[in-house]
Length: 233
Image (cartoon, rainbow, N blue to C red; front, top):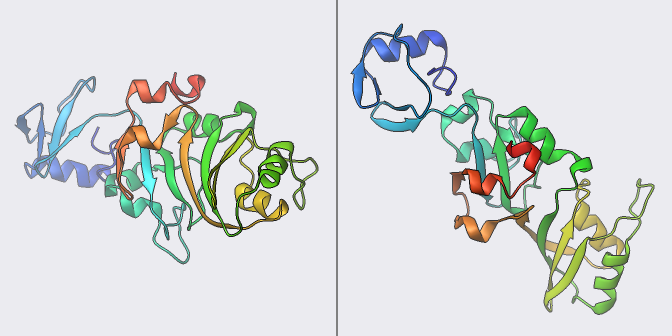
């Protein structure tokens, strides 16, 4: 059970139990052979409280200058913002945000959920707020709604929805999830993206999660239901 929750190898977890560092439902245990019912199981390791989870589903408010990679190359990786146990249990980002893009990022160790959220066939809408170098004009909004042609793409890509929020800020909703799509679409429409923040995925909004930059939380059933229903099931 401890190994499945990311506390290390079986040998290390056995030593934790034998050393008296683990309690189960408030009772100290020292027999690693003890059988436990994982349903609703509460336990502590080094006096830190945990609840057993077959899989973890996490929302993170990604700060800038963080790479969405398990093996970052130039900047800290997103896993450095999470408990070390999540690295052991192979938690990974659901899709990616550029290192300079901030906002809502999902993370999980559930492969089926990751696939369902990442697959373009599911048409999961994602909402972004972009700060632009040049002013946001009616013509720019119209072009993004109608669709623009990107290099190496066979079809034009259009925003599901797009509206001006401020002289240099717009909100754009996309379903396709192409590489650097918002930035490339703005460039193709004659502007330039100077900052980008993802504010929602499906019906799950960053505002409703009340997370400061760098903070994370487990998703509950109600929040999961706002994402792809098949994935949440």
